[in-house]
Image (tube, rainbow, N blue to C red):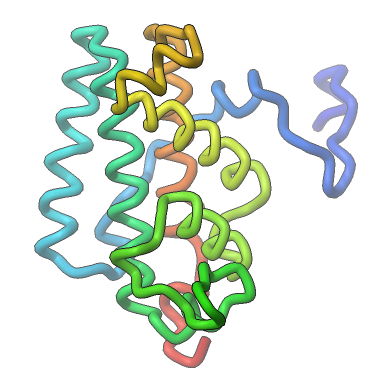
Length: 180
């Protein structure tokens, strides 16, 4: 197919480009496929709808904050369903040799552990860290220090990262396997 279209085939392990990532369509993302608590799924679905409204209204910071919040909520919900796996990961955060309780974890911790468990792929892990960095603009002095004002393009990138994460997490069989 690539030859017919005049494209070079992607080599195994080759990184996806930002443009390829942004143009990827995630038509069938669904939080319900994550097998998480239905009450949290309800709240997260409300936030997904709000993200869409904010994108239409060009409320870029709101989109970024909500995308980071939803990603953290999803990863925490999965961790609560699979505490043994998350706590035993070599990437789980520790203090004095003991794994921290989930309420003490950061979004960074959840991303790294999800990646270490194979729930997220390398591309989404890296882009999720970028989303996390922008989400930290919720602190005005963090935004001032960076001297950057996220725009509509930044918001769209963050939305795409969230959709890609939901897609990968919902397609990952490890979430459903009770023996993992």
